[in-house]
Image 1 (tube, rainbow, N blue to C red):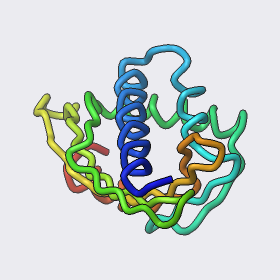
Image 2: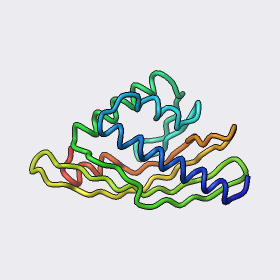
Image 3: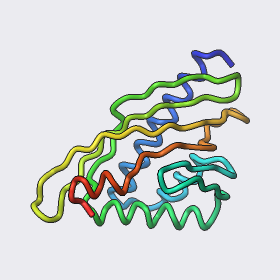
Length: 150
């Protein structure tokens, strides 16, 4: 696969992934299944909380559902992609640097808070489908505390 083809596939993947976030924040049914389809059978997360890996399946689907419920509870209204940089690594793998732009309604004063943050995703294109097999996340808890959201 060419570098251009990889970039286009990854860009289309993240367009769908951002749409999944929008549906999740609107509490639409079936989002947990869409999230699990975005991840490989096994994946790894690295963040200031440590490095964790897990299988994609029923438990992950439940965790995704809980995670989106938590976002809605703290007032997250939107999560859009502000910038996307795709780096093909070889014919079947890529890295994406995604800058997210979120809008959260702070419960204490009703103010809409804009938060921009960047995650790095490592993707596989095995079998023609783009799937996340690892990602590096920011310190979400610190950001939320700093903005008075938790």
